[in-house]
Length: 283
Image (cartoon, rainbow, N blue to C red):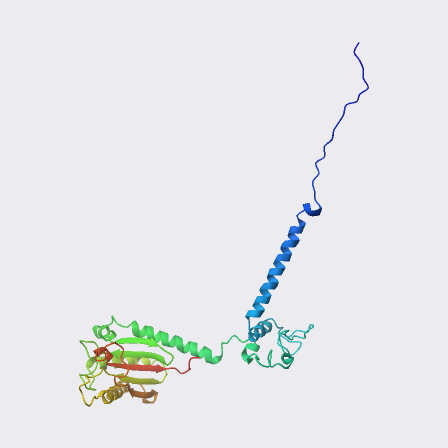
């Protein structure tokens, strides 16, 4: 007979505890990230405020102003500052004169203008017109041998004064007869070509002539008289080809005072400059 016992079996229960509170959770990381982001944005704002001028800050404020301002101030707001900037020394924004007495914003920037004034738009149109004429002159040739040969004598550039069309001597082909103001056929062809081009616009015209230097042994160098005569001769050629005389603003002889190459006696320094003057001065 087997022995009997009153002992009960022992049952052990193990519970897996998952911590979700206190410092074991991850919610604090989200809050910390938000805090760091806010601090970074704050310091960036302070840096931008320090790096911008009063006029720039006023322009930004005007950009966000309502269409119908509530107060006559830069920002147009009606809050605690009444639209006044905290960077103003006084209450001048309420008078509409700018942010500060020493550095008042310009009227066009205070209104939030983009800067595209009528003069600026006219200047851009004129600039485009010069670029078109420049491309037209540089792209000529191919129609005839005369045009192709003429192209060798032309360089153009756009300057603050206007579109400069420069005609110059080559070592084997001269615009004028040697040491005179009598034009050769190549210059007559160039004058006809340029006159046809400049007649498409209404800009005033300036004509200038440069000549190469003469040997220093000459007691009486004729560079002033020769350059003036050649400039006058170019003016006559343009008028003979249909350019209205009233468009000629000035005719100037520059002698040998502005050589374009190192050798002042080089033939390249013999040149004529025809300048289409700007109607709208460049800012």
